[in-house]
Image: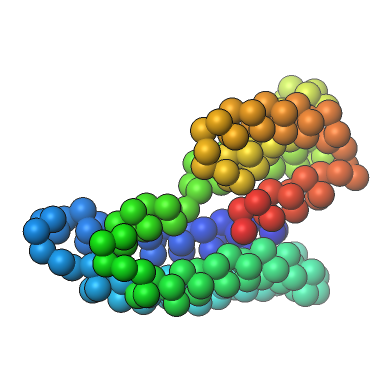
Length: 202
């Protein structure tokens, strides 16, 4: 549930990042559209902060309604994972218009969302949950421990890729986290591993 809220917010991040990036890519270098780009970033990321948080809330409420239980635990996880990212989007929105015009393109490139690591983490968490609940593909393979460890390894890789964009640091930490997550994965530690990824994502 926490990952679902985070992915909703990350999707809003990606949309907010796409608009000013496209604007800069289609503008000749001789003109100076950066102040307008700063304003576009501000509006886009403010909309992402609000829209992503609302989407996370609706997802939590809908899940509680669908299973006919109290919605508050679901809302706590979806909103709790989305709000830190919404705060990050708000900080970006407040900061962007103050960035010097010449630095905006490079600054915007550094704020791109971690889409590939998020996709890897989503696959890893799916495999971990499948191992704990004996749902596909575990019910077909009959190897819950192996599937769960593989999912945990993917989550460890995603955490390393998210925590740093330095190629050297990624190369060193990704194998270590993958092996470490795979070794310690159990039903008791799975939530802690997921929370660790959410912290890195934030």
